[in-house]
Image 1 (cartoon, helix red, strand yellow):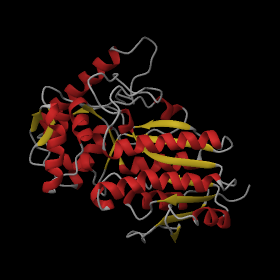
Image 2 (cartoon, rainbow, N blue to C red):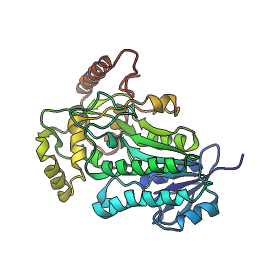
Image 3 (cartoon, rainbow, N blue to C red):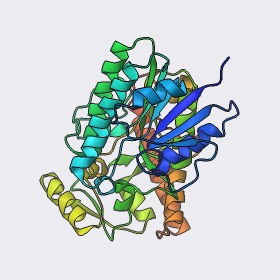
Image 4 (cartoon, one colour):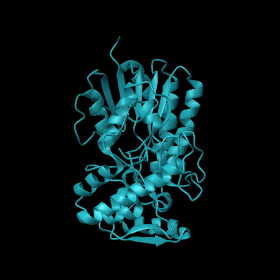
Length: 356
């Protein structure tokens, strides 16, 4: 069997660079090309860096010349500030993906595409199911920001699968990714003096450690799973529990104020929160990760709680006293058991939202 050639987009960004390096270090030793418009700040390990724009017409020629057979699309940006604003961010996320898929259409040697997406495509609202499976239809689809971009990206990817039925395509929908080296709008919310939420609501949250996110992308890239796959650490934390672990109070806002509050926080430079982020903190979102474990063959090494604790420690956010932390654990278990009890007989617990 010939050596695999994997192209990873967005390698100048933290997770993209980590995925490229991890793929290059895999025992199967694929030939990995890391692509971006600017050189990465960190080492890509054994991956080769190629300076190019996915929106360039020359991408198809590059893939043909390098005999690329697998593309890992990591260049979907979550923070407007890092892209130079919301308009450039949308252009990179949506238009860039469209042009990348158009290039892939012209390269028959590319037989696998893996796209990093987000569980944000399910939205967050009061009418949501207790757990989202990959087949769930969003009752409150995202209307703004990165989640909306990913929803559009997924639509274009589905169109690509219809045009290229010979190519296998996987979409990884990650819960909120946290970790020592990663900063996201949601993680920054827990570093604010007060954590914004929605009045009268306490969302159930799941997290994925950055190392587990990278490992999941590697498994998907070199594996055979197709379609959407939910990825989340086991267990749940409520917004109030997570805020207490960070030593922050929660301030509940009327939902009508969420867009205004999000814009205000962004303009102050405190956090790049969208109204979708505030809805997540208020209503929460829990994923069923059965496909991740049983079909893709991947089980995150860290639970939701462990991932969040490592994030707090790395960013030096104040934690709870042990006794109070124990109470939070017990409350979390009660939430999980309540959700599990509400599932139909014979169905699996979430993500699972069950404890090990």
